[in-house]
Length: 128
Image (tube, rainbow, N blue to C red; front, side, top):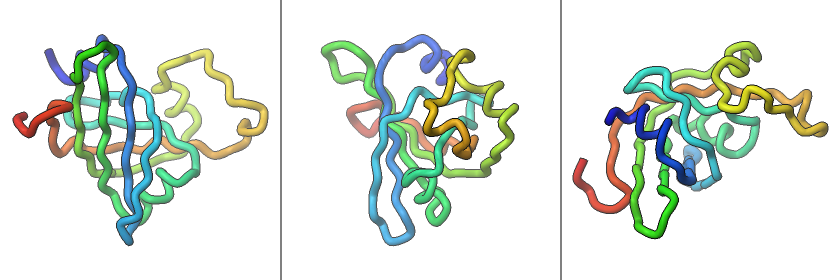
């Protein structure tokens, strides 16, 4: 099974971790990644701490824990390669096509942030 197929079919929860240039860490709940190809993913972000950290430090990690009682999942080690704010590109890629921004965020800028997948590890252990 390819990595994109895995994320299309497996249910679970994800956490994206970033750090600023001084090493101050942030973690945030994020949905499954949007696959551009098997080596490139993207996330839709607001202008919050996660996005801010990526301006000074392009490295991030995404932890995905599968639903269920066993500890299974994936860890993706990532490097930001670019970002854009084109609303049409964001609309095209988002999971829920009927999603509407909350009233207080309808005019907020959203970013489509692209990452190169540097390494993939299981949830537990260090063997690829």
